[in-house]
Length: 117
Image (cartoon, rainbow, N blue to C red; front, side):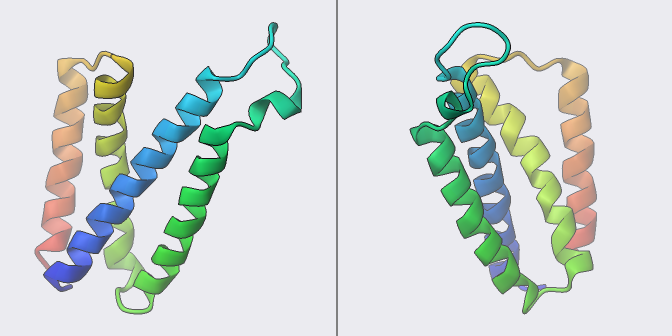
């Protein structure tokens, strides 16, 4: 796999993480009390942006799979498991434990092993 495709896969995973941040923002902006707000209250700008981003990422993924074997591309999706919690820490102030960072390091090492093939 070329460096170009590795970089595009990293951007793809970062985009997936950004989509999750948008979905969290959508959830936080839902108005209405109780556990079951109206379904219309779920529709807000963050949700629409998140769905739009995921649509674009789906098109990018299909394009990528024209050139990169699925078995090589798919492990890069795990980068979203690194990017999402880190973004949540900076944007929402969520706390991550030392064990969590250890797990993130293991994921990153696994991806590096696969990318070096």
